[in-house]
Every structure is written in structure tokens, then in C-alpha cells.
Image (tube, rainbow, N blue to C red; front, top):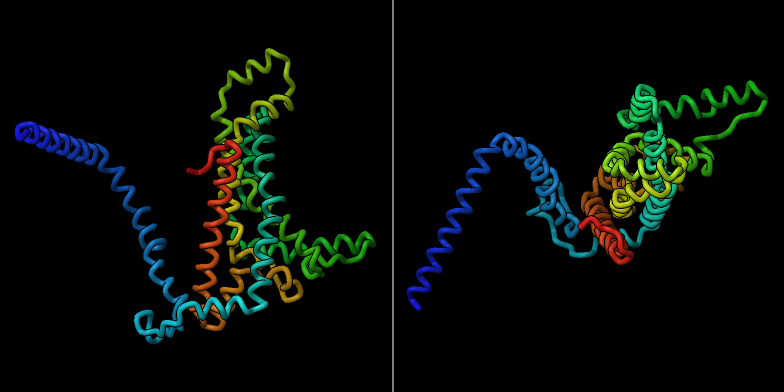
Length: 319
């Protein structure tokens, strides 16, 4: 029995030594790749994990002069105060409504664009089209906001053309319904082209023999898109849809802040602008942190629920 134990112990040590040697060999062989990996890991550690410590401010009456360690602990009082504010519920409702409308209007756009670009046969025209569609993604929302104001304000280019045609002015940015349409349209214009990259990559991965077989059977382009291209894109579409649903409670600050104004604040005031107003404007960092924590928790719940539903209906989830 002792001999058996000794043999097993020696075997385990040999396995550990072999694994260690293999690990060191991998490190030496791919040293430059591991070195390149250090930068994104450092970024994630510094800007994603290190700030998690600041979450405790949501449970404190935070004082900027005393810091986190010296501020008074108040438990859930900050959350109770937030949930009693009507302005918070308005911001929450606007965030969900705008994200839902963005999902309906904006999510199909890059899918349709990717299919249309893939069907272009002229290579040079295809490249030029892709470049033109990608460009808006690289523009800052401040620049886009300025362009929108110059074109669609009361004295902007669009209203000047309408006035010259005798049609009168349209309040694109100060009438609530018109502003909502502009918000969605500009969002689709800015993001749809960039979103096609992932879908085009998924189309490239589809087996070309399927298209050749469809050509031999005399299938039209629409039938090939419906029966080959879309099913081939389906896993990518499901994963991106799950991630989009996970972000339903979160919304970027730039777009609603730049495009919004006091006349449409009933629609444009969202959680990110609410946090900016109470956190930066009023200096109440406890409330801002509490709202941010609320967003993260609810977003995680949405993500888990969407992934669970996808798995239940037989689709591939994100894990």
C-alpha cells in the first residue's frame, strides 16, 4: 500500500512538472503575444475592476473631503431617496423607451445593410459604399449634434428649403414627436454602417458550396438570402441581440445630451443625464453611484434573462 502511494505521489509530481514545463515553453514561444496582452489586461484592471471599490459610496453619505473611509455609512437610505423622486422614474422610463425604439429601428438596419453590401458584385463600388457607411461612426456626437442643429433647427437648411417651396417650417428639434423621430434616425445613420462589419464577417464564414448548390437548383437571390444567408447569420444575430437587451437599462450620455433641449426634456432626460445632473451638477456622488449600481444590476438581470430565453428556444447563447 505504501509503495502504491509512493508511485501515485511520484506520478502526480511528474504530471505537475510536465505541465509547468509546457507552460514555460508556451511563455517563451509566445512571449511577444503575452507582452501585447498586458496592455488590455492593465486597461481592464485599472478602468473596470479598480473602480468597483467606489460602489460603497452608494451606501454612504459621501463627503468628498473625508473620502470613502471617512464618510458616514447610511445603508439603503440613498436608494430609498432616489426611488421617491419622480424625476428618476421619468429618466428610467425614457431610457427604456428610447432603447426599445432603438432596438426596433436600429437593430435590423446593419443586418439589412450587410446583406445588401454582400449582394453587390462590383468590387470597387462595394468598397466605396462600405467606406461611406462606416464614416459616421468616427464622428463625435458633438460634431453630429452641430450638424443636426445647422440642418434641422428652425432656421436651418431643411426649413430654408421647405420655406422656399412654400411648405412652411417644421419644428424638427423642438416638437416632441419630431424630435423622437430625428433621434432614432440620426442614431441609425451613425451606427448602422459600423454594425455591418460583424454581420459581413458572419456572411463570409458561410459555406460557398451552399450558394453553388442553390444556383444549380435555379434559386433566385431572394431565396438564397432567405434560406442560406439569414440562417448563416442567425447565431451572430442572436448573440448581438442578447447583448443589446443587456444594455436596455444603460444609455450613452453624448447622444441624448447633445440632441436634447429644454423643450423636449420630457423625452430626452435619461438615466445618464440624470446621473450627470445630480452627480456633477449637484455634487451628490452617493446618488450618482447608487443609480449606476442600479443600472448594472438591472442590466445583468436583462442579460441573464435574454440568454436563458435564447437557450430555452434552442438557440446558442453567449455562454
